[in-house]
Image 1 (cartoon, rainbow, N blue to C red):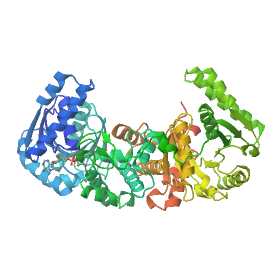
Image 2: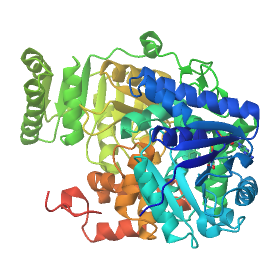
Image 3: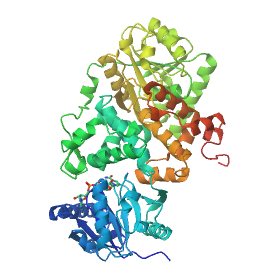
Length: 596
Ligand SMILES: NC(=O)c1ccc[n+]([C@@H]2O[C@H](COP(=O)([O-])OP(=O)(O)OC[C@H]3O[C@@H](n4cnc5c(N)ncnc54)[C@H](O)[C@@H]3O)[C@@H](O)[C@H]2O)c1
């Protein structure tokens, strides 16, 4: 029989604590909510009130249930109020000495059989536990932000946590409607160990002006389907908390440079820019605690006029290539009203691309998303040819041929000879340096990267890559074209992986390393990222879809260009590729897909 927890205590009512109080009170558990001072207590109460009021306004909580919820919560200053609770969850700032002091005090105040839990994200639960005389009753219960919403709880057992304590806490999580993964005490547990290197990397991109905050966030939301961009997520977590987590992970997690907090973070924390809770972090919010972003001095002007500033007029577009990307791109342009010249290496290839475009457009008609006349008009706008010379009068060329530098360079040299002056020449490469293809022409200022995502007709994002030779007009033209296609363009520098792949693949590689180290299972790691961070797929699901060979190739490129030791491909990934376990396409990757 699992132990009954009828009253729990929560210490610290900040970003996490207030949410944890709500989780318990919503599930019929009495809560003693403790803060360090009256003003802090008031802030905690206000956070709870506004959260439950929002739930009522959204129709997710009945008024009577909200009132009952509030009656279950007793607000007190000081730990003495926790004398008779069954369980305490500590959620004070991420400092080991502070947590140890609080645990020593809780040990003195609380009943001898009470379980003492910490919500720490990165500190050692073991080190916290030894501040008490009952380390076997100390455990990590790591909720995710926002606690009332995110389904995951990481239950962290130390080498001395009693098995029955673990079992009781697991049963409690189930009662709270949460999904738990139980793991050992390691820096960052599952989710943060995989999340924070990525977040820090994104801050580094922002700090080095590689891309704007809006573009970094849009890239990860639209390119990977994440619920929030990394900088908006940093603001939600709180920059002070994020700094402490990174700092601890750096020290505890083998001094991986990727966890060394980017200097800008410390500056922002010192300047009081803590994220949502202080009303300003990477973004500016309506007021402290508000989730609503308001424009500030760095908000870009996104009017069409501003976008078109310096852009060249484009009516006719050439697309070179006959693969998946070329096919999708031809469709996207033709549907958007551009005249399209498709160039392949022969009539047969042209016929098969034409067939593929027709099939895709027909699907749109069947689904009621495209009128028959519009399909016919789109097809009528496409010319099929195997002769590059037919690109003599286009305004924009998009190259989507095989991912080999020598092939692309030769093609760009030919385009340079054939195309009229002023044409924007774009490559869809996802891993080669754009400047290399640009320098194969006499007009590098007109060359940009236009990195579409697969499938191009569906994915809303395009990365516009400008090299150090790209002119502002060529960039403006590329942006304006993306806007006309109904896509979101993000502009970035010419570095391996651009924004999305550079941020995504090291995280996937880290997940493989975690699995390889036997810290957790593929299922639990996938669960943790989906339920703790709201990712649409877990890392192993995604790797199997993308293909392990493709992922390994991208990771190798990143490693070779940046020489970051942490980016070295995981040996397990290399072995699986060698063994032919390439993912869904090979019916086996991290998982067996032979029965599906
Ligand atoms: N922010 C996140 O997204 C997140 C997610 C999961 C876990 N965590 C972890 O939760 C813990 C709390 O983080 P947070 O972001 O909520 O911090 P926070 O700064 O938002 O809140 C901490 C609260 O603790 C209170 N406090 C400080 N000293 C206290 C004391 N002696 N007694 C009682 N209360 C005291 C502060 O007044 C403040 O309200 C940290 O261990 C953090 O790593 C944070």
